[in-house]
Length: 99
Image (tube, rainbow, N blue to C red; front, side, top):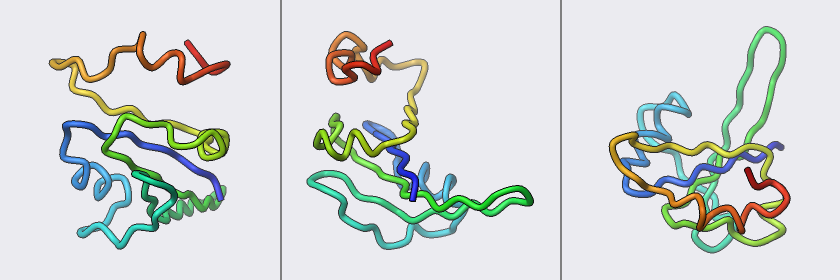
């Protein structure tokens, strides 16, 4: 199962996740690690099927090193009118994946 992590701070994260999962109500979550929960998301198209663990947190965290190593994609949602992330603070956490 592929893992996608979403960090949502200061936004209506439930609405955002409901839109991604294409459901009316957010299903029960699975606790991955401290402060990170996941939702099962299945994408089924004409060409492929993918089972994804859509992870979410409302804190600025990458979780544990083991969790971070398993993440295959990251979604960053931000309001262009607000500064939510100071990239200089986050870059050290990205290690070899830094920008």
